[in-house]
Length: 105
Image 1 (spheres, rainbow, N blue to C red):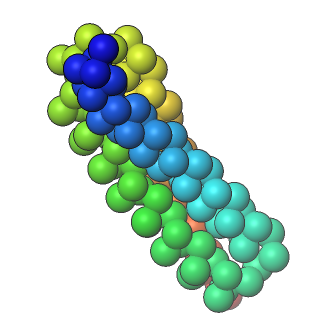
Image 2: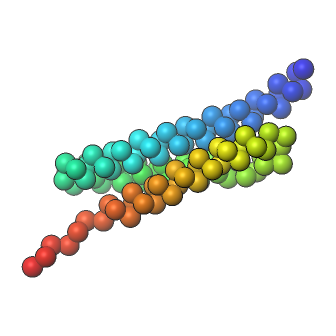
């Protein structure tokens, strides 16, 4: 029984980190959207930094998941990995929309 619990703890920690990374990504995306709606350059710059931090967190979580895909809980890890992939793609879309438009003369 102890061996099973010891084996599951790192796996649960990886899943928790992945879910935390997804939440960080969602929060960063929301911050960017709010800054864009407010047309606030300082908030936008800050939120872009949060977005970059979120991207690193998502990439780290994906890396951790990839290193444990051989485990017995493969299906659960694949589901979390899909959520991370969606979060990463969403970050890319939001990041692509953060470029300031050039003034039309």
